[in-house]
Length: 266
Image 1: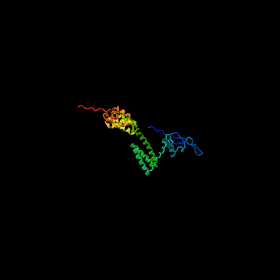
Image 2: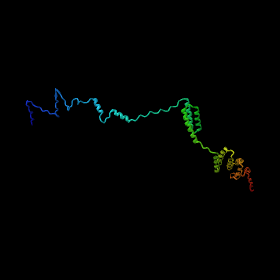
Image 3: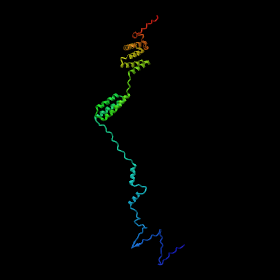
Image 4: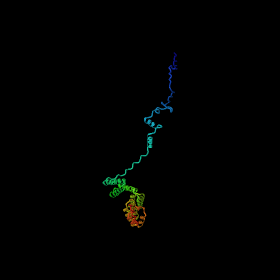
């Protein structure tokens, strides 16, 4: 077993001890007047102290990548748009009174008649409402609007006026089609507007003769000849009156020779 060498003794006879340090030896501070002088290179104890807690919090807040509280509030404010404007106030309600209730009931009747296409009744209700409730300005404004709607709808549904000549022409068309009942209906309507028109009496006589009503046809033809003598000649040569040639009243009226009776053989 190997032996470790014994330490050497110095001149004083005392044994030296070797001290091993992990790092380099620090020089001892020089003393001037009994006080140690600290060089600039050697840090002082005060400089190596940890910062206070409030300084630590400030340092953490100012780290790179973490915005401060004021910056975060500014970003939040930028993310929201301006607040919307307040809503407009609702329109004022109608004053509740007995006259208001009655006017609304009348207005409802007029509107109902308007939707039922009873324009005459609706117009009457609206006009009466304007006269009876002049103080209900809000309701009267609605009434005037519905009056315009009523006038427009009434004009759209109104049938065009048919002239008397058009009615007579319809009768002639029906007579030529063989619809003598329909022709007489149109001729009578036309005669109601022009009772002294000889050609209308003549047309009525023609339709009655074709229908087989001989006596009424002769009576209408006589009235036509009284209004215009030329109709006597027209009737004598008109084929619509062939069925009346066997009647003495017709032959005397138009100036025809009555047909001789033919005796049947025994």
